[in-house]
Length: 100
Image (tube, rainbow, N blue to C red; front, side):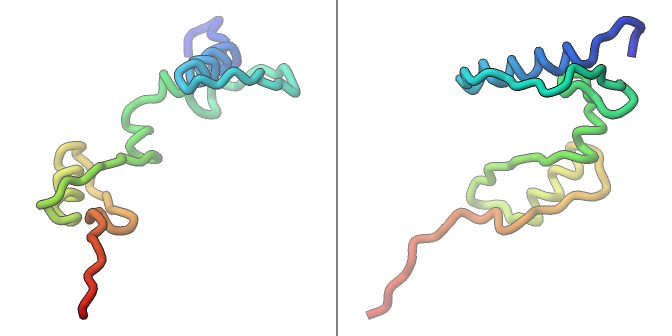
């Protein structure tokens, strides 16, 4: 980080941006006014893409047709990563069938 960068202030601006986008009007309660050491993480808007991919999630609204396995393979290829997976089914829910 460059000299004179105020990570605490940048973090506060980020929180205010998120609140504005979400329509949240509550006041941020600050317990301690301590400086943030930039060696311990990133301001979200400044976080490098590789860190997002390493520790983040990619949310996919899978259309009917391709299998979950195919979608995971496409994501791996598009993002150039070796490891990826899915949690739960990516298949759309089906209407229950009744016999009778």
